[in-house]
Length: 123
Image (cartoon, rainbow, N blue to C red; front, side, top):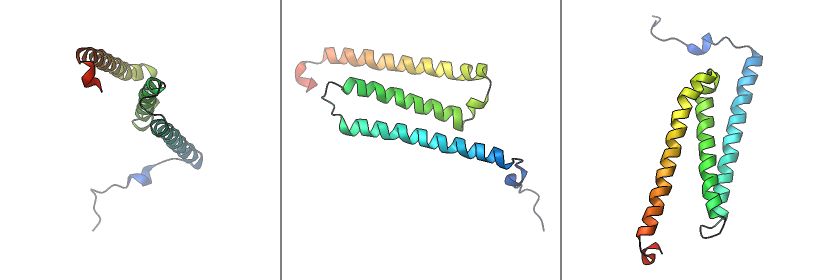
């Protein structure tokens, strides 16, 4: 008895070998790019101490690299990069504005808390 509720989607893929090579090349590129960014983040966190003068730059680089990775994942794996430019902007701009707002609130309130605490609690 043959079941009619099971459909093999891999048999329905109409790609030639050139399209397959292009897709595999894109997957390898995305994997290498995200791996390199992650390795840079881990290396920065491992080798630069929090008390050093470069730590604010490291924190901002973490934020920028994390947002870069998140945006690239959304554009690639959620197929937003294949959509029209207008749709990309309609989806991404509100999130970007929201993230900027959250960063502003964190920095503003963090500064206010730092000013409110006496110096003895800051250590």
